[in-house]
Image 1 (cartoon, rainbow, N blue to C red):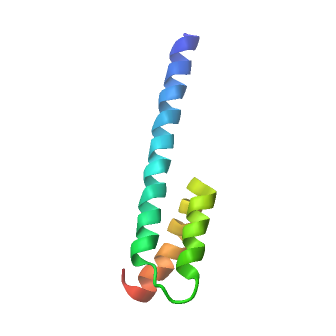
Image 2 (cartoon, rainbow, N blue to C red):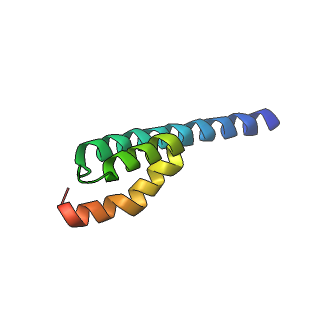
Length: 74
């Protein structure tokens, strides 16, 4: 029974890690492609996403991306 729970935990952990990695790549590409190049915003957000990994991608997704879409429509 314990080995089945361990296997289930490992599979769930791998799935969540894969989803977080996909989100990270998606937000990095989104920032590089669509973030306006005025000022240092693009450089700062790329550094936040790269250096903070999943947390940086989540910050960009929930904080900056909706604001950018509202301002630029992209």
